[in-house]
Length: 617
Image 1 (spheres, rainbow, N blue to C red):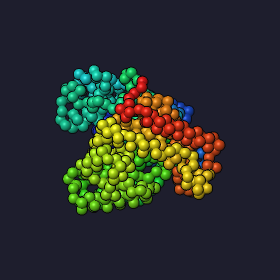
Image 2 (tube, helix red, strand yellow):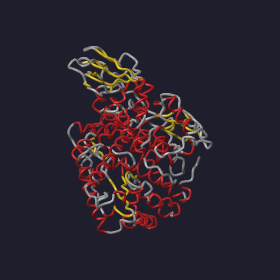
Image 3 (cartoon, rainbow, N blue to C red):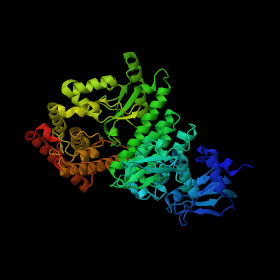
Image 4 (cartoon, rainbow, N blue to C red):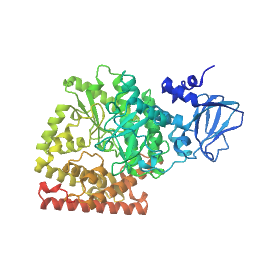
C-alpha cells in the first residue's frame, strides 16, 4: 500500500518537496472516507483551515456561492487539490466540494502546508490552477491595493549571530519558510528554507556557522505603501520567495510571500505568465500571448488603477519576449544566447504598455561578438523572434526600433561610444531620438548592467548646451486637442491621445529625471523624483502624475471597448465615443500639460542650466 508521503510526491505542488518535508507533512495528515453525495467542504460558509487532496474517487467543485444548477465548475480526480484559496487568504471564497461516488481524501492542516505555497513551486502551482477565466466568473476578489494589506502574520525574526541550525529550527517551529535578520545599519538580511538547502546542505557547509555568513544581504524590501502589483512584479522578475515589508521609519512590519497574492487582483497575471514560460511550442506560446487583452479587460473591470494594469501587462509581455527568444535561439545552436543583452524599449520598458503598444527593442552584444557576419546572423534570428511575437498579438515598432535592425544591435563598447557622441553632439545622426529611446531601456535578458547609454548620460550636467537642446526637444511635442493636420483634413472629431497628450508628459518626465540624475524609468516615478526643482515644482509634478493616470485610464478603457467590438486597438480616439465626463477630462488634461510646458519653457530663458535642477525645498 502506498504511503501518504509517496502518494503526495506524485502530484504538484508536493512533487517538488524534499523527502523530509514530505514526511513531515504526511505525519500531520489524516485520511477521510466520504460517501457518494456527501459534502466534503463548504468554503463559502465554514472557515477553511485544512487543505484537501483527492486520494481515490472524484470530487465535484463549485467555485461560486450560487452553485450553478447545470453542474460543477470542476471535477477533480486523484491528486486534485482544493481549499487552498480559502485556507491561504482566510476568506470565505469557496469551494463547495461534493463527493461524486465514494471518495477518500487526505486532509493537511494549514500551518503545516502553508510554507509549500510560500515557495516558488507553490506559486507556480497556484498559477496553473487559478486561471483568468475562473477569476473573472467565480472567485470573490478582495480589493487589495497596497502591500501592507497582504500581511497575514507577525514576521519571524532572528539575529545575525545565531547559527544556521538555530535559524532552521526557528523556521521549522513557525512553519514560515524564512527568517528575517535585522542588521545594525537599518537594513535586513533574509534566510529561507531554499537558501539553507542550496547554500549550506547541498554545499556541505557547516550548520553551526553564523546566519550572517549565508543570508541574503541586503534583502529586497517593500514599503508598506507600495502597490501590491509592484511587489508582485519584483517577486516574479527577481525570483523571490519572501519580501520583508517596512514602514516609512524602516521598521519591519511583516513579510509577503508568493502565496499571499492568490487573492490580490494583480495576482491573476501569475497564471498567464507561468503558462507562457511553460509553453512548449510556438503555437502554444502565441495562443497564450493573445490572451493578454482579456487580462487587461479583466483588471480594468475590477476597477484597478491604470499603473497597475500596465505593470501587469508589462510583466506578461516580458515573459513572452523571453520565451520567444529561448525558443528561437534553441533552433540556432551556433549562436550563443549568453553573448547578448536584450533591452526592452519604449512603453514596455517604462512598464506602461497598452493594447496598441509596439514592442520596441535593442540588443547589446558582448565584445566577443565583433564580426559583422555573426551580428547579421543574430539580427536574422531577432527578426524571427519579431514574427513569433506578431503571432502573439505584439507588433514590432513601425519606425524600425527593433533588435533586428543594425542601428539597434551593437556591442557594449559601440553603444557606449555612440552615447558619448550623442552627449557631445545630440543633433548628429539622430542623436536625441536614439538617446531618448535608449534612456528608457530596461534589460530583460542577459547582463542587467549593460546600460551604457544611461551610464554615459549621467554626466549630462557637464554639457549645458546638450541639456538645453534635450529640453527643447522634450517640449517640442505640444499638448493640444487638435493638430494642424486634423484641421486641414477636417478630422475635428478625433484625438490622438498618445501623440497630443501622453508623449508630452512622458518627455517632460524623461528630461526631468535626467536633470536630477534619477535612474527611474516609469513616468510617474520620474516625475516624483524630479519634483521640487525650479523647472518642475512639486505642484506641477503632482499635476502631471494625475494627468498621466487619468489619460492612461481613458486610453485603456477605450481600447478594451474597441477590442470588444472586434476592432484594432488604436490611440486615435473618436471623441463622440467618449462619455461627456471623459471628453471634459481630456480637455482639462491637455490644458494642464500645456500650462506646465509653457512654464518650463519660460523658466529655461531666465535660469541658468546649473539652476534648473537645484531643489527648492
